[in-house]
Amino acid sequence: MGKTYERIDGRLRTFIEEQPLFFTATAPLDGDGTVNLSPKGVRGSFAVLDERTVAYLDFAGSNAETIAHLRENGRITLMWCAFQGPPNIVRVHGRGEPVFRDDPRFPALLGRFPGVDPVPHGLRAVIVVTAGLIRDTCGYAVPFMTYDEDRSLHADRFRREDDGSLSAYFEKKPDVPTSIDGLPGLPLPLPGMPALRAD
Image 1 (tube, rainbow, N blue to C red):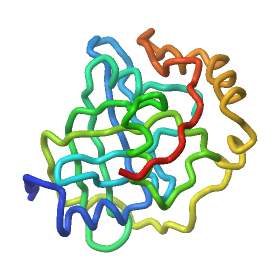
Image 2 (cartoon, helix red, strand yellow):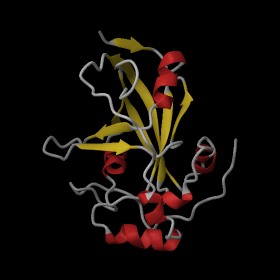
Image 3 (cartoon, one colour):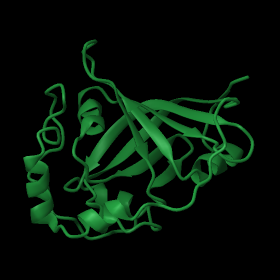
């Protein structure tokens, strides 16, 4: 049976922080628009900021659907599954915001991810999510699967880029500055990476 939680703490927080993979789901307001579902998996790129706020690092890719949907309406759901150990699924339904490199909050937010070097992955934004509904369900039908290690391919590809060439890469991708459905996506040109600040 599912349970609703008031906050992300204790056993619930431990569970989501231990998972090597989570999923994000967003959609535009247009009923005919494209629903987006994305896996997120770089170790250290997710953080619990407080009992109702989480954040994750948004890295380089060939589209920016999540960013576009959040800029339009803010709706997002995050989901974690237990592929090992006792069965469990946790969902955080909430409102999300992309915090871009030129936002004054960006350096302090980046400081909340000490376990990952964002530069090789072409960091675009920090996605901050405020929970509106926190629930878990049984996960009885989720299969057992073994986590071996992160793939190195993403970092291998994007560590070759500096701020200028990364911005040029995004500008060439039709679904980065604009979503599949024509919504504003990643603002370009990409600002330089600011210095890390721990507040």
